[in-house]
Length: 163
Ligand code: RP5
Picture 1 (tube, rainbow, N blue to C red):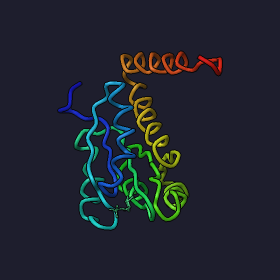
Picture 2: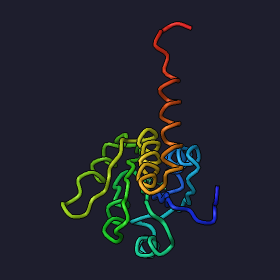
Picture 3: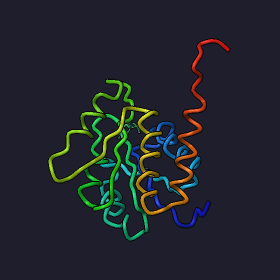
């Protein structure tokens, strides 16, 4: 995999979000899609947020995965400053189990879309897969790897309940 030209940016509000967002990175690794991860907090590092969002396209990123928990304004704020597709991952919060994160991310005003995934690790995994599916629209080799990945998933599901 060519790590020098990551196509997917994975940004998160805190290092504490990484165990969740790593699931997106793992999905991208499985499909040989290069990614780069950064901590970009909407509230604690607002200048970094603006610089990243405005510069993401110029850096060569094609898709942004943004995950945050609690008052999770990161995905929406990133989306407000870039035309790149933004996939939002609600991180499971301690106080409200991620429902606060979900509602903070999903209810965007018309005109500024964030593709919101499920709360937690499943959402992060699917964000990685969805990013790969977007990139596969213009990458036949990646489309082939996705088809193989999906076939393997199907094959892994046993029809019986006993070994
Ligand atoms: C949010 O606050 C982060 O996205 C994280 O999910 C949550 C807690 O952050 P820490 O206090 O663990 O740094 O900004």
